[in-house]
Image 1 (tube, rainbow, N blue to C red):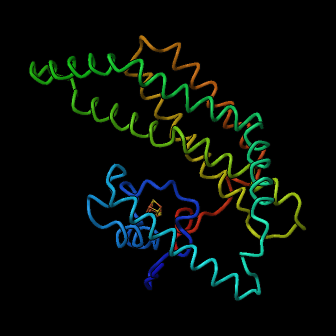
Image 2: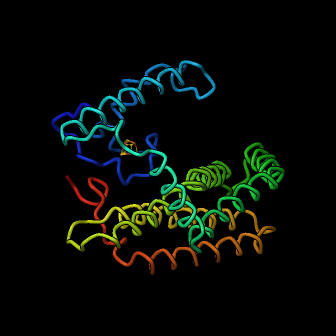
Length: 255
Ligand code: SF4
């Protein structure tokens, strides 16, 4: 990836990939790469063949890079026992997925999805109610603000809905590997990934609280979601006690 003078090295390793809302796009090599390689609307449309052609090119480029870098270290990847590696990766994934916190994160992604889908009518009713308020121009009412609050909360919940599970699985997997290595003082990938999870959990909890304020009829159900998310957050903090203090390049410090 091309890097410019003001690029923040590795900022994309521990960000939430929400580029539309990121204030570091001009300093992120990953963003520049995406802009360069997926520059047209067709190339960004997952349902368009051009997207898949581009992705294929990116994989090819990556593979060439891996082969070249491996050769520098005297490794011929054709000599590697990939079947064995695949089997061991599969076993590792199963172990990671079986841990309580990863299971809880997976369950949350399903619960959040179910709630949003089954309460679609509530959002429609709310929309009608807010539009009526706009038309009536009642004093002391701020329907636009309320609508914007709800839209933002739903977008946040949806953005992190699966990311919490995926990133937590990565954090747990990295921790398993790190526990088998000789200890050192370097920042750990597990803590960085867990930090992304904690930020996502903080924002999701705040957003569910917003939704709860606007949909009092769903209070009990949303309270359950909030309790489960808070428990998950405590569990992540206990499993990764150094995650909160992990400094994500650019995002937690002024680079
Ligand atoms: S750092 Fe910002 S611009 Fe770069 S990948 Fe992450 S969210 Fe996108």
